[in-house]
Structure formats: C-alpha cells, structure tokens
Amino acid sequence: MLHRNKSRWGALLLSFSLGLPLWAGAQTVELPISPVEAHALAVQNLTRVLEWLPPDHLEQYGFRDKDNFTDVSIGIPLYVASFSDESVIAGTDPRIQTHIVQLPLVLDGTARCFIYLSRDEEGRWMASGLGGHNEAHTWNSLFTGKNASDKDHLSMLHIPQTHADYLWQEGNTWKDVSVGPGHRNGDILQANDVFAEAVRIAAEARATVKEDAGS
Image 1 (cartoon, rainbow, N blue to C red):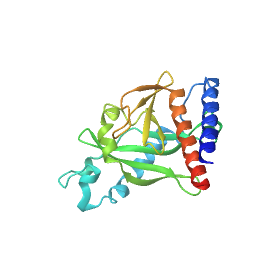
Image 2 (cartoon, rainbow, N blue to C red; image 1 turned 90 degrees about the vertical axis):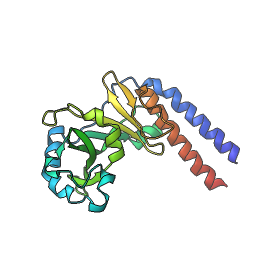
Image 3 (tube, rainbow, N blue to C red; image 1 turned 30 degrees about the vertical axis):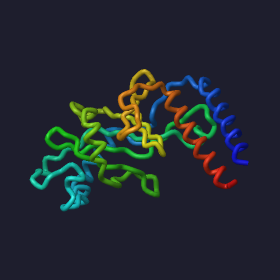
C-alpha cells in the first residue's frame, strides 16, 4: 500500500508539472491595503506597539537600553503573501494572497524589527505583532533609502514548511531571500519555478498524510 501511494502521488506531481507552462500571466501580489494606508496605520499604533517591547529582552528585537525610542521611524511596507491553497492543489493558474504586512522599525538608519499588520475577525487591518529582528537585520539593505511617505512597497512570497521567502522583482522573477541554511539565498527564480516548489511541497505533504493513514 505504501508503494502504491507513492506512485499515485508521483503521477499527480508529474501532472502538476506538465500543467505549469500553461500559466503565462504576470505574477503580482494583491495589495488589500494600500502602502500609504499601511504606513499610516503603523504610525498611528507605533507608541502602543513599542510598549510591547519586554525591557529585559530588548536585544531580541534589535534594540539596546540606551536607544532613544522617540527616534524610531517606520519604513516601507513589505507585503507577505503565499499561493492560495486552491491554486497549489490544482497545479495551474496560481493565485497569490496577502496574509500579513510587515513594516520595519528603523533607528539610526537600520531596520531593527517589524511591526505586523493583519486582519481582525471583521476583516479590518490592525497592528497585531512585533518581532522579526533576524529577518530585519538580514533584509536591512532592502529598506535603505526608501521613502516611507510615497507609494513604494515590497512584495514577498512565503512558502510554508521550508521557511522559504522570495522577493518579487520586475520582469516576473523572484529573488530568494530566505534566512537560514539550505536555501539558495540571492538566486533569481522564474515565477513558474517558485510555484513548482510550492506544488512539490504540497504534494509531499499530502503523500505523507496518506502514508501515515495507511500505515
């Protein structure tokens, strides 16, 4: 039974890969809240969010005791999205859905961590978290020289299970900006390649569930 399941999912994955070239549309990330609105919401909640910083663990958020928190500013929004479950299961016509917006907290020209925006139960965007110092430190150059008051923004695709992140670039390509070992950080991938990775992960996850159920 285990071997048959592997063969079945292998055939399914092959059919997914054969269907990928059918998609030739431009890949963009949905902006459910405009960059200007996202920045204004983060500014409005900055004081409240800074109160969430634990005094004994400031370094985990990229800060120090002697930092002047009145000088903290907010950078441009980073829209973090993923492929919709439906499109990954179908293996064709991938759709991207934004799940969270991250805006860097900048001090002395350096991104220290992020303020997170997400939807509440009624669909309204709100400040929902604070963190991501390691990512902010690694991606600091992405935010340097960006004017948070204009319409600039960044779009990033996150693939769960592998902790892979891809920054959208002009020309319908994605740059691997994943944090941690085992990733091709800095490599440029075509959109189809990124989607194929998502399909592969989804197929393997379903195969594992199927095998566990049959064992």
